[in-house]
Length: 328
Image 1: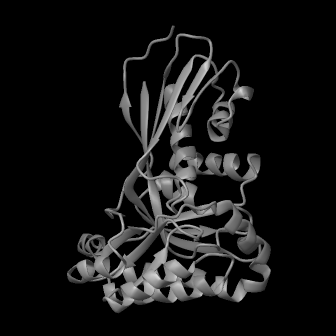
Image 2: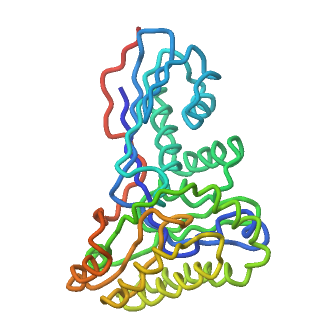
């Protein structure tokens, strides 16, 4: 049996410039982090000459073409594996909440299947092939940041080039700054799940009319990278987050909702420095940055929603368990 653990991600600035509608014209960029909530994928031998895939439902298929789980099916094709396999997926956070779960699944699935074959892979290959599966094969109208954030982990400035290549640059940060950043952030669940594909499709179709705003959003990713370097400046980080919030809301496309806007304004009145709605928007998790002593007031101001911890995952997708190999 092989088990992989792949982080979800939080993107702080530049979201939307990883879509080809933007980066085919000029480079896009995001500042993102792998976070300590994960997708787990297991792969093990199966006695029957079928493939069993267990996720929110269970499939038993007598051929790859009959597998309905699209990412599992295409990952099996890409890695050249098929029958006699048991595959399971378990995520810490539900899909549709803005933390890049589908891309973490694609990266983790590929990592597990390659490990089952005895092949060592690189983060770059995992991210590139996950993009091929999600974007080129399955035709999802998504960007290219989530796959790279999941594969690499850590804190990265990720640049998307017009020729479709991607550059991943780790951001040098003092450990003290990252420790304080972790303590300043709340992840609040809006209790709304959404189809990111719908929002991203609208954004792709409307990007030509929003290039100036998207350009400013991309440039904020560079500002955040500079802010995190050296001694790090939490006040500047919060200011840039708030500026990014205003820019992203101005795009429209259903990115925010009246309820989320009310939460954000209430959090600001209670002492939040800045924040953002994770992922494409429309629901999911609201990230709020504030001094720890203001956290309780913010929770009260927004009605004490469910929340999850924020920790930076510095390692990316990895194999965490390998049992003795045997086949039937």
